[in-house]
Each structure stands twice: as C-alpha cells, then as structure tokens.
Length: 423
Image (cartoon, rainbow, N blue to C red; front, side, top):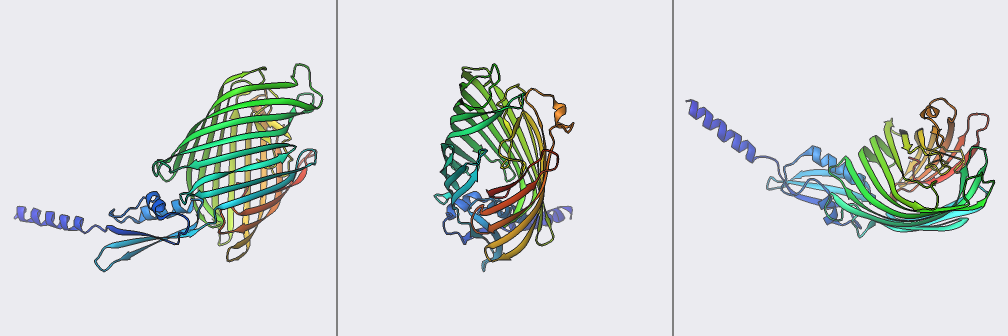
C-alpha cells in the first residue's frame, strides 16, 4: 500500500512538473528603429523558458531604461494549443538628438556648445556622436559607446576629447588668476552588466594637460606655464533600482566614480599623482498622481594636495544652482540637492513641469582639514524655483530653467539653463 501511494505521488509530481507554464513565443511590437533581435537578446525571458512574471516585470523596467524606449508594457496570452505567448510593446523615443547651449562665461562673453548624438545607433542602443564648443577657445569631442556589443552583458566605449577653456585658479591671497587650460585625452573602457541592477565600467585614459597664464596677479612660486603627460585608471560602478514612467521616477540609484592618475611627467610638481573618488546617492519618490520628489547626495574626496588646481569645482551646472560659473575649488565636498517636481500640464507628448529646490554644499580647501566640511566656513545654501518643458517621446528632451537665491552676506543669485533634469 505504501508503495502504491508513493507511486501515485511520484506520478502526480511528474504531471505537475510537465505542466509548467512555458513561454512558447516572444513577440516585439511597436519598435520601428530598434531592432527586434536586439530587444530579444537584451531581455531575460526567452522562448522556451518557464513563465515567470517577476522576470517579465524586470524586463519591462530594464527596457524603460534604454535610451530608445519611452515606455514599455507586457502582455501574456494563452494560444489555442495551450502554450503562452509573451508580447512586449515598445513605445520608442526619437533618439537622434541635436543640442545647442548658449551662455555667458565669467567675463560675460558669449559662448555656445553644439552637439549631435545618436543614442540608438544601428538600432542597438549604441551611442555615437560629438560636440563642438566655443568658450573663448575652441573645444570638441567624439564618443562611441556599445554597452551590449559582445554579449547582452559586455560592451565597450571609446572617446577622444580636446578641451580648451579659460579656467580661474584661486590662491590664498584672495586673488584669482586666469589660465588657458588645454587637455587632449583618449579613453577606452570595458562595460559589464552582471544583472539588471548592477553595472561596472573600467577604463584607461591617456592625456596631455597644459596650463598657460592669461591674466591676473600670480603669487611667487607659481609658474606661468606648466604641463604634464598623464595615465589614469578610471572606474565606475552603478546600482540602479529606479522605475521610470515618462517624466516620473521612483526608486534608488548609487553611482560611484573613481580615477587614479599616475605616471605624471611634467615641468612642475603642481600637477602630481592623485586620486579622485565620488559617489552620488539618488532617491526618487512619486507623490500622488503628478508629483515627484527627487534627491541627490554627492560625496566627493580627492588627494589633499595644496594646489590651486583642485579637482572639485563649485559651479552652476554641476552642483549649486545660482552660485556662478566655477567660483571656487576644493579637494573634498558634500553636496545635497533636493527638489519637488509638479506636473502642471500634460497633453499628448508635451509636459509642463515646475519645481522648487534646495541646493546646499560644503568644500574642503586645498591643503585644508576635513573639519572644513562641517564647521560652516565653506557652506553654500541656495533655494530656488524652476520650470521644465518636456517632450515625452524624445530621449532626454527636458529643457530646464532654474533660478537660485543665495543665502548669506556674499551670496549671489542666478539663472541656470540646461537640457535634461539637473539630476
């Protein structure tokens, strides 16, 4: 009797196992420029695999992060023969993006930057493009990134940049000196994505940097010209658990950047070996049907060399809106950006969004002590208001305008233009 019961249980288990829901067909709909073969290769759920709603939901979130995808949904249907058909419906972004930024520099002179990038090159979500800028001097750069070139997890990125700018350099005597900064850099990186939430990048950067004096009161011992050849090991690690629905974001993201510069050979020890580390922690929360709370905490730390060429700049476009263009430098920083975004109007592809923000940060002066980050001596606080014009079906088509109000006796106010959300 016991053997009969055991046999019946075994047969029942085998029957249950044989009836596992299997995805017989995976269909892609709605894609025009993005290749169907790329999407099928990119997705975890394949034809012939067991139906797993959690993995399908993960695929949908993953597809939404692609530059070519504005939105993605999934549908499961039972066919006449009892098998399951999975359909991913893609709503594509327009991914060939021209750019034009017009602004004034520290001398109130006209400056601009034009660019053209294709974020869906060859229909495989590769990035290719470049930029040209005129800000006193000419600069340009070209880029190619193929994160899924070799496998769905492994890719490569290459770029070359020739950046020439007028850089203010700050000294202890409260005098700032303008230098012409000229850097030519070539970088190649390997990109690896072990799973949905994690991404790694490791690369080598070879550059030549030159500083040439333009104007100002140069302190004793500071050269009028210096330069160095540098080799840098660069790395990046991203943890991304953000869910996107058009202009709304929810979830957590951490992005860590590291750069170790070695092999410096030049005419002056002001350009020495150093390291730079920075981590951005981002948290987004949906508030009701039209609200979004966004936060970024940036922690940055570098070699504390007593040099006027410190790596972290206090700048409108980078960290504190309204503070000005490159008004100070430091070797460590803590910056908090928090803002509430409210959709005011939405019709079809167009979204009008407002925001109220608070940007605050502290810096450690070159050669200073870590206590400067916490004693209030370098604290900057800038609340402000902004407006966003968003095209829902063009990748990163967020045109923003913010006005920051400085708090404190020597604080400034200012307007900041840009493309894309500030963070």
